[in-house]
Image (cartoon, rainbow, N blue to C red; front, side, top):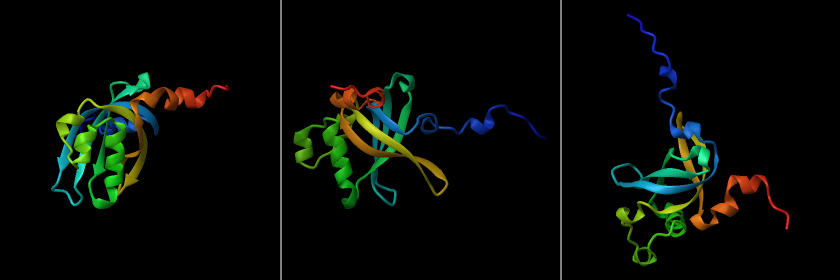
Length: 142
């Protein structure tokens, strides 16, 4: 028996499909370390705060912990205001990450037929006004 279910084909659309590539002010909502996968990584859930039209959506991505990728994890931790004392001891406390805010630049890639969100860059939350899309589209002439 066949059934028609309106909207079924679009049900698998994620927030990544709704959010364009760009720069966003986000807050860390959830962090989980994954050791069992081929490449150990942190899975991040980032709540979008700005731009306001995307507020409330969640971005999900990974930060890898392989020796070649530690520079990016360090960049993320430093720019999101992670405890410098813990960072200096090479310690990452997942509970300390939740609630941290910062700016993230994202892009979408397709890998093996799966659409993924790539974290291309980070900046402290205090730089949001300078980096926000509204300011990039309308630069003020001094």
